[in-house]
Each structure stands twice: as C-alpha cells, then as structure tokens.
Length: 129
Image (tube, one colour):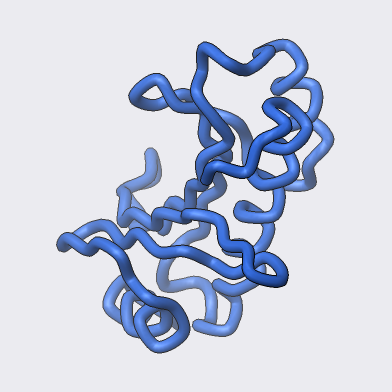
C-alpha cells in the first residue's frame, strides 16, 4: 500500500513536476494529442485523522463560470466535486493514502483531469488550464 512518499515517487517517474513542496505536487497530465491539464496533488488529513491525497485540477475563473450549470454538470460525475479556491473553480477528488496500491493512483488522476477539462470546455469554451 502506498504512502505519500510512494505517491511522490510515482508522479515524479511518470510526469514532469512543475512545483513541489513537502505536501504538494503540481504537474501537467497529458489528456490528448499535444494537450495537457494542470493537476495538483496535496497531502491532507481527513476528518478521520487518516492521510489522504487530494487531487485537484482547474476548471476556470469563478467570475466567468455559470455556477448553477457547473453544479449540474459536476453532479453527473461518478466521484469528486467542484470547489472554489482563490477565485478559481477546481474539480477535486481525494483518495486515502495507505489503502491504495501505486497503480491505483492513475485512475483518480485521469478522472479529475478529464472531468476538469470537460467542464472547462462546457462552461468556458476555452482550454487555458
């Protein structure tokens, strides 16, 4: 089962990390031909006092998005949800550390990134993130 250090190594081996701190990684995840989507992974402690990996990807600026439409579209996803942080709308999902094998991280990364990209296109018509 994978802890935070294992996850950091997993990401560093597969993707070019743009920024890293003790509890956070920022990198671009490929989503198609010559396209990438920004993703951040943070180590957080859940309400259960258990370590989690919180995966986020930007959708767009909060003042340029129809929030009612965002909630409707985000509600159609199987996991994750939309949040606002620093005037930016993000799609976010979390997975428990220590309970998932390393190869199990790729699927949540893809879910978050592909959903954020789809929401960005539907709500802004742009591809900025």
